[in-house]
Each structure stands twice: as C-alpha cells, then as structure tokens.
Amino acid sequence: MLERKVIITGANSGIGKSAAIKFAKEGYMVIMACRNIEISRTAQKEIIEATKNNNVHLMKVDMSSFNSIRTFCSEYKNRFDKVDILIHNAAYINHGEKYQLSPDHIELTFATNVFGPFLMTNLLLDHLKNSDDPRILHAGSNIIKHFFDLKAKISFDNLQGEFKDRRSHSVYKMYCQSKMALLMLTFKMAEEYQNEGIKVNALQINGAKMAKRTINKVKPWWRPIAWVQNLFFPPTSYMANNYFEICTSDLFQNTTGKLINDKLEIMQVTSSEYPGFFKQLKIVLGSRFYPTYAHNDHIMKQLWDLCTKLAVSSPT
Ligand SMILES: NC(=O)c1ccc[n+]([C@@H]2O[C@H](COP(=O)([O-])OP(=O)(O)OC[C@H]3O[C@@H](n4cnc5c(N)ncnc54)[C@H](OP(=O)(O)O)[C@@H]3O)[C@@H](O)[C@H]2O)c1
Image (cartoon, rainbow, N blue to C red; front, side, top):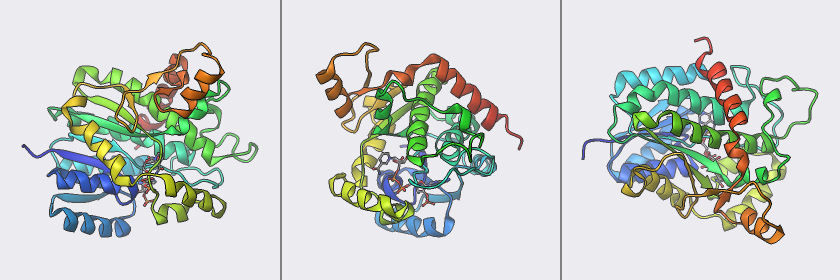
C-alpha cells in the first residue's frame, strides 16, 4: 500500500486519540493536529509505543484561530505531498462557560466547531485533490435531535458578540447549533467537491466514554451528569473504528454527503409532515432519522456565505 496520510484534529484525547491508535496500527501516517503540544507529546509517545508505528506526527493547531489554522496548513503543505483523510474531530464542548470570543472575534463554539474546520478544509483542498481517494469526516452529535423541535434554529445574529452581554447564553445550545451547522456544511461541501472526487460525510456520535480530563473541563454541576453518562457510553475505540471504516473501507468509497449513525447505517431525513405522536417519538429516540432543518436551502446558503466571508476572506 502506498503510504496514506490522515490528519486527525484533537487527536490527543478521547475518540481522536483512539482513532490515531487505530490508523497507526493499520499502517497509516498519522498527523495529530492538536493545540496543546506538551500534553499531546505524551499522547504521541503512547501511540507510537502501542502501535510500533513511528510515522505519527504532532503538529500544532488551535482550531478556534484562523491564523493558527493558516500556519498549520502552510507547514503541512511544505512537509507533505497530499492529504488522504481529514477528520474534523476536535470540538469545543465546555458546558457552562460564559459567551466567549475567539481570537478572530467569533463566538468560541462556532469558531472551533464550524468556521475552523471550514477554513482548514478550504486551505487543504489542493492537497486533498492529490489523493486518489480523498475522504473528509465530520464528528457529529446526536445533540442535533433538538432540531426536531421546529422552533429550533441557528442564531446567526449573535455569532460575533452582538448580544454578548444582553442575551442569556448557553454553551450547550451553541454546541447543539454548531453541530447542526457542521452537518449542513457536510452536505454542501459534498456537493461542492463532488467533481474533485472528494467525499465528505458526518458520523452521528451518540456517546463515547469521556476522558477524565474532558469531564474536568466542564463546570462542576455538569460533571456528575457526565460521569453517569459515561457508565452507559461505549469505549472511544468503538467510535474510532467507525471513523476508520467510513474513511477507508470500500463500502463507503463512493458515499458522500451522508450522515452515518454508529451502526454505520446511512441516516435519512425526516419527512416534513408530522407522522403522528408514536412515530415521531420513535424517530426522536432512534438513530435512523435526522431533522429536516439540515436541508433548509436558505439557512445553508446563509451559513456557507458566512463561512466564506468570516473564514476564507479573513485578513491574514
Ligand atoms: N464523547 C461523546 O460522548 C461525544 C458525543 C457526541 C459527539 N462527540 C464528538 O466527538 C468528538 C470527540 O469528542 P471526545 O469525547 O473525544 O472529546 P475530547 O476527549 O474532549 O476531545 C476533544 C479534542 O478536541 C480538542 N480541541 C478542543 N478545542 C480545540 C481547539 N480550539 N483546537 C484544537 N483542538 C481542540 C481537545 O484538545 P485539548 O486536549 O487541548 O482540549 C481534544 O483533543 C467531538 O467532536 C465531540 O463533539 C462526542
């Protein structure tokens, strides 16, 4: 096999680290794209020792900062000839924090989970095109189920601090909206890059055991909930295997623009008609359907235009 290269953002802990182990075990060149080099260096060593694959590289990137992403991409392009697989795994998930702005003056959750991945993909497009089977995967979340409530929407009017001190803020809601936005980008990117042969999909993650460090990052009142959830969540290696399957297997070679559940089934959008209480309950509790909001063309265009304006056209 010619050496295949995979970039995994946030590969120093949780699912990202397990994915780095899986890809390294299978002989891939792994680029761990992480913001905290000191902590990530330890993870890198562990991964190399566990897999006996020395081709595990660590590169610094803060996904909430356009400058940092630009630096990462230019260094990557100087060092490596192509990207075969790009996994946008990193996410800002600190429940309970106040409204925070990124270095580019963008709400931190959206900066990290939406605009950052958009910019990185954009800057790596030429390198993705150099691969004979380029695949991008977005780490989604079942939190988007909140959009089965037809009143739910992405608050575009408060992404640059407009109502920072005047509106109540919930990082949980922002996280939910950011994951819906990332899903919408999945569909739009798949369309945009189809002619280039770049496949773009999202995995809906229902839960995976959270690292102690991750739980300690959230506010104290969330921690007991997180610990209880952890009792029922599968190990991170389960989701990492799903990353691997979607990004490498023949089964998904021609799949693009899809949301895939943790049983590796392609999910379907719900019908816009109300199916009745019991069917609706089954839809909300199951993982075969996602909300119609994800295909709202007007919102999709608004999101795409905003990503282009804020991330790609941002001054360097
Ligand atoms: N675990 C679950 O139950 C669950 C459920 C649904 C969806 N997901 C999704 O699955 C993915 C992985 O989650 P996880 O549970 O494995 O979480 P995790 O262990 O907390 O990993 C998140 C990773 O993202 C990195 N990160 C955060 N902000 C960053 C930034 N600005 N720049 C670069 N890296 C950054 C973190 O780095 P630091 O170590 O430096 O903070 C960490 O490596 C996320 O996209 C999450 O939304 C997880």
